[in-house]
Length: 227
Image 1 (cartoon, one colour):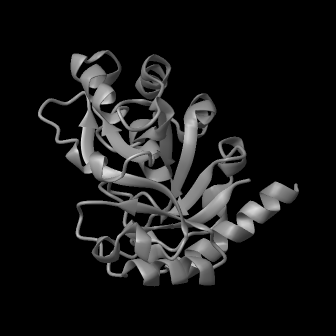
Image 2 (tube, one colour):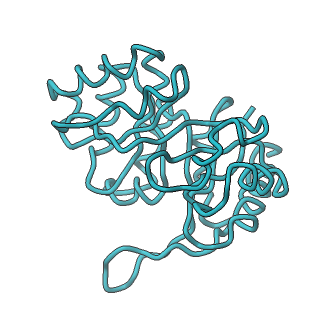
């Protein structure tokens, strides 16, 4: 089963109970959480979600980079944690040490690495997963940032993808960072290639339309699942 939901990054001002209520009102069943960013869910903690499933907890750590503080992961033993990965991280000595620390309380496949601007390339992420046993959070904008071609980058990453984050955006003609906009069905035509059973898909967007975005995601996914 594929679970759909929202990221706390879409609604950082909502308390845990409010986040859970919004996810459920829009037909979702899961949330992903970002720790250490001042999101209000942390005031009540995971217990405040009233039983809503948690896909993963994101922390501010970069595999392969020196001087990373991994202590936030210790607050969520046995839960999946999401981190980032620096270019060259697959072969970096720091990565082995960091993965050893992160897997004291969880299996390697419960360490998730996000596709992210400035981070490891798609090819490096595959090598990282093969070497260290971690899995991926495929963020559509993040992958677009690091891939030469989005469509061709998706299939090699699919076997390693445990979760997906989606947002609506259009690349500005003059370049630069694209602002987030409400999600459209046309943004999601690639989902069927990456979301195997057991994958979580969440909306992580600053569009300001979380309920509508999750409704769009749910409609698109139902069409894919029934095709």
